[in-house]
Image (cartoon, rainbow, N blue to C red; front, side, top):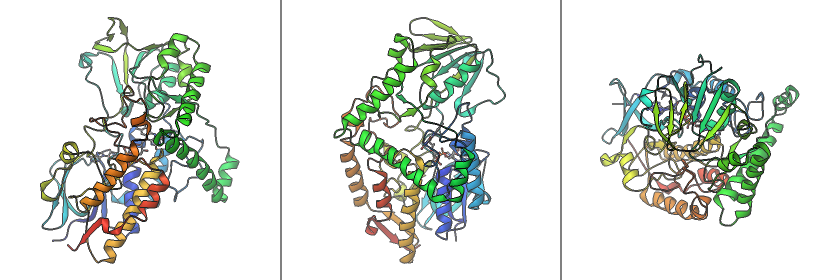
Length: 495
Ligand SMILES: Cc1cc2nc3c(=O)[nH]c(=O)nc-3n(C[C@H](O)[C@H](O)[C@H](O)COP(=O)(O)OP(=O)(O)OC[C@H]3O[C@@H](n4cnc5c(N)ncnc54)[C@H](O)[C@@H]3O)c2cc1C
């Protein structure tokens, strides 16, 4: 019995859309993209908080094969990313393959019929020859279990569920969390609220953001002479690559560059915040790069405002009208904004239950052994499965580097499979182990192991203290290997 689809893709963000474009290119045209939200765009559909913008220049944070000459700023606001996602979906004919409001619960490999059996919430079952999960890294919102949060009588907003109709003017607001989202959001809330208290557990490294509007004349040049935008992308990508590869991954060999970035952030803080005690509290006590770097010209400055206070005592409980910290002090509020981020390692990896060959459960396998995936995309015992949000997959700083390397990997893998007239692939244990050994060794010289990251509370680290998210190589290496990995790293069979 033929499966319903050539492929099922889970997630309609830039990852799932990239997989869809590649499947089309490979001639696997009969696929469906299942998405639990009511529209496409993933991160850029779900997040709508004030101040949301990309923190990688837009010439780089976009598909290289689909440049957008009309970005309004160097760092485009979130709404433009959402419109870009819609444009890509339309241009590459993905929209008609998408099914929204569809929560995938799990998938099981049917060895007899060589296909994936995908279960959707509500009981529907779909079958497909191939399965690709693109469920995101930062897609499962996290709210810490603060005692008493259920009793809070005011308005609670998680940054992933922004209430556009709620007016912050004159409110006594709290923002809990000081990660990348808070860095963008806090200045916006401070502008409107009567009082704002920012609750900080871990200070964050913030470097200046060189952001300008892109004048229409430059947009015209990008449009008419695409090579100019390509050149801009190359320059920007090279700078990001240097920061990541030299400053973070080769920390042992290039400490001065890492330290230099830290000094830049400290000078930025010094120049922006008047009060010495506030500056001290905003100074990170872990190395630059342990967490994803953030960029802002307005975050630090916000703490000079008379209506803004930084609270660094830990939160003990939440009461109907306020937050009580460990020192017994109560901050009275009517609006509680949770910038508490995402749960990566407990809920994601994988985001759905995936059962492979011999009944192996992917989540259990990763937790009982180590988090691992060959080239950050395939796993032994999981035939015909592409895990796009995998351990060791995130390459460089722009997510598009990752998805485009994975699209290339798909191209080479499926190309070889078709050449052999096969329909089933599986990565070998040997190739997977060799890759895991290699990344483990490489991570040894990164800031994650050579630096001081223990107090960073960084999502780069999993529950075992391993920095298992980033691929510890240059993005050039990731792309080179995607088109040159040994073909015998896979087995190929007919269905
Ligand atoms: C606020 C914010 C700002 C960011 N800024 C940057 C940036 O500047 N640069 C950068 O490189 N990265 C940034 N990121 C990371 C960003 O997530 C990636 O760049 C990229 O958008 C990831 O795409 P994705 O398709 O892998 O995941 P996502 O965009 O997260 O999409 C995953 C999709 O899977 C769906 N899904 C999950 N589980 C299920 C299920 N069980 N069933 C059905 N559907 C499911 C989700 O609803 C979601 O739509 C940012 C993230 C956030 C949250």
